[in-house]
Image 1 (cartoon, rainbow, N blue to C red):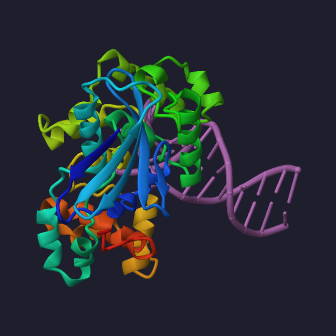
Image 2: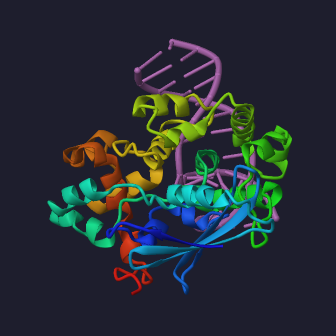
Length: 304
DNA sequence: GCGTCCAGGTCTACC
DNA sequence: GGTAGACCTGGACGC
């Protein structure tokens, strides 16, 4: 199945690829030679799908395949997933207008930056975020890789991220001994069981039905999600005022502005206070600017 | 080899 | 509300 989706003129698929580390965590995959981002997901009826996306001018060409035949109703569901993952309906015009007023941030609209890649489900985002805490990025990749490999349903080409039900069916010892998630293991089990039972509906994070405060309360009520993880997850759900300080970004800030000397978080936050509800996102973009600039494949001019 | 440190933190007990 | 200590893994580093 092939779909064509229209995107706003300021949309850059490649900007999404470098927006954070998600694009290199499975089931995401990046093909630089084809300038293609691909991932796996599961439809509501359990059908696993493999999705590959390329941008051509103001359109996205989306190739979808599955080992099972598609139901007639699959089209809209697939569009919903692709739209949510690729942030197609995220309006960044206000952010870009604000950034244009500051010479040091004019690169943001120039690169079409500001949209942040998400997983197909808020559950997948939350599990992955727990796997980023208190460890190196290579360990995050290893834990997520083992989760997908051991519990994910095959799409033919790869495996989708396990569902809450899949993860809830495994005991804590599985996460300790097989996934090697260490002390995070009971957190992962509890999160999966709460989501699978319906006690916790993380997908509400993606709707406008909850206030940012309610979303934060929901996230902080999950064991294993502290200030860092909650702020990062809130950013994936449109709360761009949160700073998500961690050792990596505060070090990056120290090197950029203070010759490597660490400064208090409130000092950092002062620098971005003029950016209103986008202050946390501007902080993130400011620190990750080298990711955009060093990427030789980053195409400002999308294919004609 | 082996021990130590630390990396994109969080929880709990205690004050 | 603030803080110290424990917690898993695995790579880097020094010896």
